[in-house]
Image 1 (cartoon, rainbow, N blue to C red):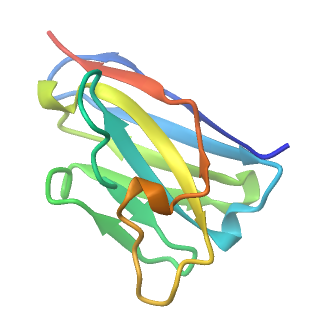
Image 2 (image 1 turned 135 degrees about the vertical axis):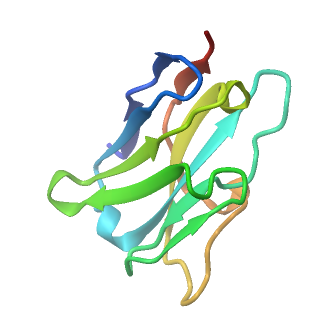
Length: 127
């Protein structure tokens, strides 16, 4: 069974940090680009915040550049999102997604480009 499971969300104060995990089962993340997305209830899902290609290259949206870091652990078949300097505007449900066979020099930034999705994990930044 193909599955992505996010974990690590929670409540954090402004300026704090959280590390989200995205663990895959039923397929090998080594063959996929992995993106992190977020969505606020009542709003459309944003484009990819961060993308990890399977060739080691990463992409960051301007809104998170310098604050968020995406990384992989092939042995654990997992991808992580380290979020630092969190702001109330970062409050959302965070999703990871996997896109197979991403072309060379291409970062899939749109949600419709992804094949598999996790169920999401809530991140709340509030004092």
